[in-house]
Image 1 (cartoon, rainbow, N blue to C red):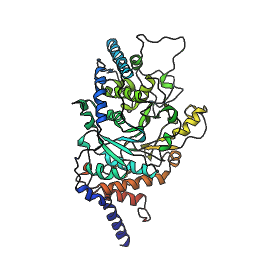
Image 2 (spheres, rainbow, N blue to C red):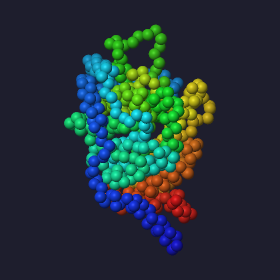
Image 3 (cartoon, rainbow, N blue to C red):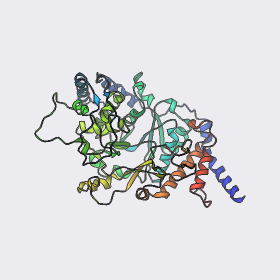
Image 4 (cartoon, one colour):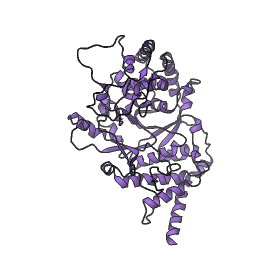
Length: 486
């Protein structure tokens, strides 16, 4: 009975988390406008949008023969890039002309990106059911000691959650920005932008000069501010992280971005792009808007015409087709510096009767990786030196939203319907990023979010079981001896 009363008091305490903000919330309109909508960003959009429209590809959408296979990256795999798209020669020529026209427009009359000089911060996109996930990730990031401010971009007012945006996020030095408020400077322009396209536009309209973009379900294991102060970012200005797969860029893309009217011919053998580096996983992007403004503008062009043209050209239907290849593609087309971490991404999950159920990706420290590659030590090519330390955890699929994560056969409910830990394999990777200690810290923030947002978050409207379910999981997995939440 005493144990029951203790558990009841603990759950009652958890449910009351966040109530200190209720007075503020009572008088806050869930549709109140964000104060950060900037006329300078609107001015930029009125200058930039016409350049995008003027450089319309004027070409049919590429025709897919089939989707490219998602093959793991191997620098020794000399197979050529897949060639699975078809465009007429006229379409290729039109796209080449349009691409060249866009480059000329940003070289001769580059719209000025608006940001506060000498600032750095975090940028993310979220909205609706992603907002609770973002709160969890941001609380984990704050546990690393990070004090970097964050701007959270929402597509429109339909994604706006007054309690999260006006109470919870400001307490974590984060603020919501409604993207449509900026895009509406050009009537109907927001209708051409959705889903994967949001990321690059959030970066364009961020107020920070130096940006660490993080997906809503990604967080750093240590204070990421160190990344801004060190190489490779200090010298390169753009840092990305790898995906699992070898690149699947269409050969047609290279024809389109060539500034020559005829394909280049040389006596030397051209390197196979699929052997140079992995494809990109864009859950984390480190970028300087001061040094890489043109890269960001060209990436925006690739994204603006992404669903129709450039996404298939850059991925050909392989896993994760979307914005992820546009950043490096833009930097390479402009011959601007960048660094992609060479240490392979690792999947983390749990063992199952059928083998392995992954739910999470781990990315590695770019500073340590850069030191190794500068010495010629490429672990991806077979070097046996110790690996860099894990730096980012990206809980990509499924989302660990406490309103939806407790499904049978999912990451935390096994095939028998029993609660289970989500991160147990492979052991070397789990141990490297903190094992059960990190997993428990993550679930502590999930528990806080579940109880603080229940009854307040719009995406959980009508749900009254989220806090209790999460508390039950917590007590079963992390408090078998009755410890209390600190």
